[in-house]
Length: 431
Image (cartoon, rainbow, N blue to C red; front, top):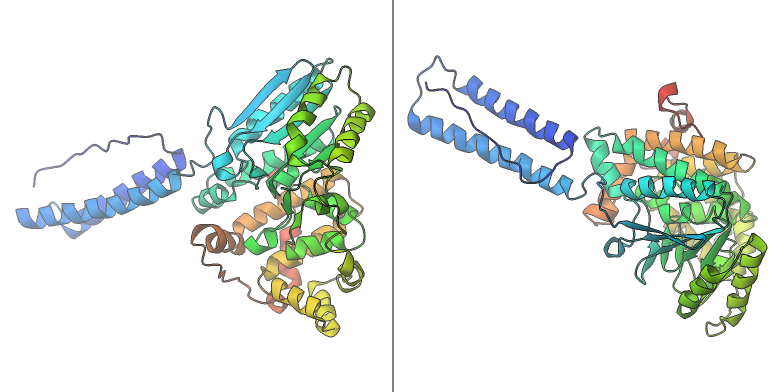
């Protein structure tokens, strides 16, 4: 039989891990062909053609998977996904992926972090402003779909994304220059990490805040363990377990934002901030206070959760999720039943690690919290629910995740302990 050779032409730059998958699949396909039709045997031309066609059909399936996977590019870089400007003595960061609600990817993190360091090391820099392009979102979260796709094939993005994101969160939380986040629009997950640890957070009537991670098999990371228990009472536990969404002025009243300015005044606010000379934190605060006082077109109503604060503090006061569920069942009110229905949709594993995360973080530093959260993130990548939650809510969008374990009772203390267990020394987050 005549030997065959072929060449595969790849028209776009795929990630190395994806290419390795294709090469392996190609080898397996043609090894399979050799096993079925060894060269020492006699085979007809039609048999050979049929086997080649089948092999190529199977290879096309692999390439289709590669094409789908590479659409996320495993968080590859685009030159303008974030815009970094120095205007006089101020730094301005614009998250520039409006078509995907400015979701944060590794490329953006690797541009923002060193620039923040450069501005911090420049004695003349007096302020940094961060905002999102478009009018829908500041940042709707991290690009977790890319992270889960990478995790499926063992790509390092599932390690690097979380590690470098948390390092950026720590930089913001310890930043020596006044940091002003204009959180206009959707601000969730990774977007919270880019804002909440900074000195000033300015919400608008379009701001939509949430930490919805228990619905996707994750946990409120990016330092969520640090800021959530510091919101007062059990509000942080409630927001973390339920993923409850805060809007507009309620983001300020919950303590997530430091100021509220209506969106049609943001452009003028930014101009005023950029025009400041020798701006100090106190001076910046006065400018923000001024624009807040001018934002009277948006009605100032009572905090949306005010009628339920007493219930939240009482019913979400438990050392275990089972205790909180029991409290809600015993309460029996319509509000309590709604909370039970919400919690029943969340990953039981996520809820258990989230509650322990927040309870333990009450007395921890931001750095210690981020180290703990990195361990949690890596164990999420090694387990089931993170992938299943992303599939059900973001990929297939059937809204029907199949959690494993499926009930709180089946999530053992040993499993929760494993989530909090240290990583190998070389993999630990070091701040």
